Image (cartoon, rainbow, N blue to C red; front, side, top):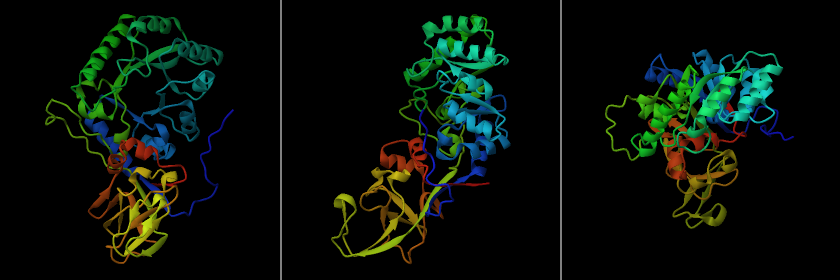
Length: 391
């Protein structure tokens, strides 16, 4: 038996580093996605990974109040707290369940994604044992990404197993794009063709899934012909989309999806140091002052998810001006140069992610500097950074 350690201390944190989540922005992003795909398409809000670091329970409850009917999570452990918090909507386990969890899936009214025969067998047995109605399942097809899903050659036998299982009912068929930001890539087009083929095989087997879904945020933006009747936005709900890559096709006629970042990350200056020219700063002395300098110390580091790759490359906003990071980002502290910003003092507000006046630093900028994607920046903000949810 193992347990996750999620909390730093059972008290309200007063350390001056925190993230603010605008639930109003989150709801507006959901409405933007729903308007974009139209009322005939169901939007399954992906809130896995603690809603990409935004806080799954408050985000889910706020989205439900805005009209969201479906929620996507990764695991049974992510779904159960939502039920405990009173979420009434459908919860889709997008990567299924593990052996031994099947009864909890039934009890908690979770909807399992399946692709292995044992998924169907265990869930059917659990529903029978608990005298529950037939359990809705979504069959995942591997159309070319190579991670999860039943292979096309195994799909007919899987369909027959589902038909024979009286205690499950096929509600949906799904797949996942590998390169939705490259809409005219051969592999993307092949996945579309394979999914259409999979749907035909399922229907020819005598099954009638009510929902078909394959689109993440990238496909919602770039591939409107693939929306089917359900889409699964993730990063768009939190205010980001990834740029189109290496596509030959014109994008001028793509309808715009307008979203706004829901999370801002802030801290405060805890110390200001004066240094002469030639002073080495931080671990390894990777930065040396070129002139007499004022250096502000921030109580945030890579243990908070503020990535070490930002060392000597990133920037923050202080008093409506950019301040460059100097020296290595350490586990708990980061140094920034405030020499050219007038009036800076201890306690001043610092924007790590967010806006101040006309200036902004967003997760996309941090991702580009760090050689990663905005998803990892947002999900990587650690549990010791308190989340403040604003209505």
